[in-house]
Length: 235
Ligand SMILES: [Fe+2]
Ligand SMILES: [Fe+2]
Image 1 (tube, rainbow, N blue to C red):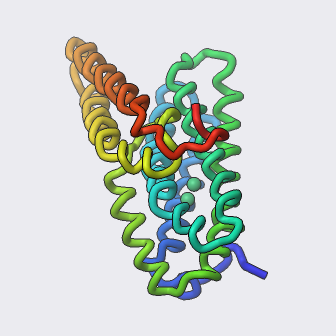
Image 2 (tube, rainbow, N blue to C red; image 1 turned 135 degrees about the vertical axis):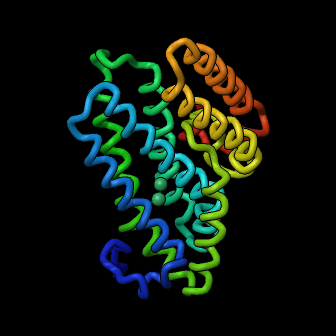
């Protein structure tokens, strides 16, 4: 009977560099942010949401391009296990994209936000309680550490914003990762500057940010970026 990685020691999980320990560390941070989100409104809510986005999208993108292909290779039921997670990721991408278009007083906002929190929590539980214990049965500590290094490198160069149209599987997500990451991270810098800029300069910054968003939308819709997607997660 496999035990959740939530209840195991760092040593049992393969040491500090293991992919399981690195995953759990991010999940704990996400849990903290989700608690901070609770009860916030307006600007404060937007700031916590931005921090959640920056954490979850690169984290999940690297899972989809590095970890789930390994799960499909080593587990007989890897296909259905990973598809379920990819569907959760897809829903997160769609919810955050929609939230970006809803005003603060839109009545749909509260419902979409609570669903977002729910799916993020479900995703963490599925990974920590089901997927990762299964991966742990198949890989030794050295392999878990090597996988941890690969996942971490990819996470650092992965997109930081929602991309619901891109494939949740290789090769589409891998092919589009670099251009989307450059566009997303440039937008992160521009948006941070807009928040600090004098009011008269802010519209210029917003225009640049919109331009970068438009380019990312084009990249996402190119045929190579959609290659490999499965019907439940394609849009
Ligand atoms: Fe995760
Ligand atoms: Fe995930």
